[in-house]
Length: 488
Image (cartoon, rainbow, N blue to C red; front, side, top):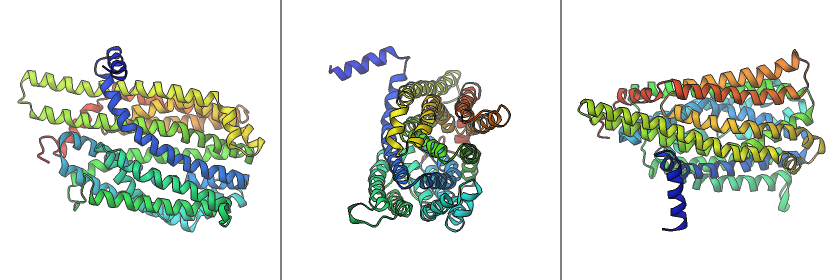
């Protein structure tokens, strides 16, 4: 037996029964997602570094414009997540017809949801940025960038559903093979045209936006084309209203959760702006560190957890449907249901352990990270405490992402919504503004509010995972749309 095999066997023996295979499969599925999102965030980090080299106004303009640009994908995020939930369950149950139907309906709905945001971003960018507190120069620069990245939004949402559907079938590599070259090319083009390297014109924030426009369009066309021509799912004429209703039921809380985050960030951003442009630029850089280092890890482990739990739920429902109704069979069904909860528990522990290593590392390295990213000493100084807090909070945040992913896989998206509402408005906005307005605190109010946000979110999600019948909800959804006992 090789050293690697002996180590695996030892780890399997040391962990509770069944945990190691669950960890191994989730990591195998999640690592490509982490790599893809990491490169994607590196592209965004490159944009922030370029904007920092241009001016503090460019940092603020790009940061706030990115916040608005995230809104349509947060709005459509529930549909994307709903497609992944139904696809993973139907893949486990072998219901390929229902899987194709869910994919088609989700892709069309996601594209439609992003269309109004694209119109606003193209036509009213400067007005929107001024509305949330950006000064005239920051609003002008941000609007130039926002116009360009808004154009491909509907196509990007269609492609996001394609990517999520491929992942939910167990193929997390193809979206990675498509997205990594696109993101790398985006970053390179941003450097060349943003800063005027290699003899190219120095276009500043317009160069960053143009690079994003080309990369997003190319990536989306390839993903949609692959899914249509060679993927495991097919476009079909949408006709099943039960699937449409379930998709909306699952998607609405997820979309609302995304919008809650986006809406809550604006007043928090306004609070930080009270302490000057350098403070806001420091916050934007710190958030970029979080999304560059901890965000991809959380999304990777979370996606792996969602696929594993969702497919297991589908397999369990299909197995239970084949039972002849004897007491022995019902007991076997109960054991199968328990295994989904056991898998979710194993994955939450895995997510927490990974988060502790990386989140703690970010917090300890806050000062050198800030100096590396910020060109101006004032911005670096302002970023250090934000990086520290977000590193520590990231331990809770990643754990919460994995716990929420298990609930989402069961179609129980209401608990993660409640978690987001309580955390964002109770901590991010409520505690921060409360300490600032009523206790007379300074910028420290923002630090405390951020950390409390993640404490509250994890507490609500953990309650939902332990105390609600999310496994039973998944079984009922599968039965209702005819996925159990289906011949595909």
